[in-house]
Image (cartoon, rainbow, N blue to C red):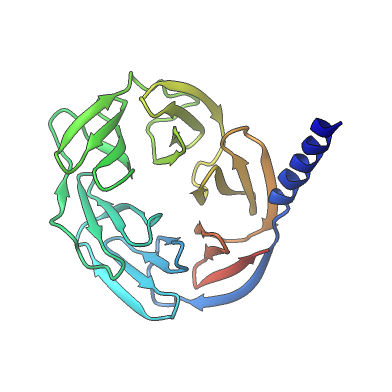
Length: 260
């Protein structure tokens, strides 16, 4: 009986954790700004990403801009004290929370590989997908030295490359337009599952991938592939999440939703 009781309690909290609602709280005008993507961090800061620049809006509404002077491929703001900018498919900039560089830019290039997607793990290591060798690489970017390589990534469902990498616990998730490929932290392939997100806004957050399909926000649990629908969203170009807010980018506004 006691085991059944604890199972019921577990199931209740599991259901409750997915019973999230989103309440529109604010909007930010971005007229006359060319923004291609947004991101956020645990300090409630918001990042507006253009081709070569990042504007950071702090929680106190102050702003600061960083010009990378390179075509920005992706940023990683999961650590609010560090901002990692990957640009030109070969350069990594590391900034502090005030967008000041904390070291010289790092060049990640070789005649043997070209990172198409990159995810920083800590202050030394990153994962990247090598489009030349079609493999996943664990790399010490401070020493500029590969640590391990996976076997060739078998791309399915007409995927041509990997566009994003997410790390959660001891798993590495490679996102392609139509498939999620799952590896362990030794670079061993574990599984894959189909997910149609081609040309759709998406955002990884912890063990979930949030994405928009047919003008509706969904999440998929990366561990058990359970899909949950949320709210209708129209004309959204980019989305971002933190613990308390959902941000959506449209042509002229960024909308801020509270997560209840």
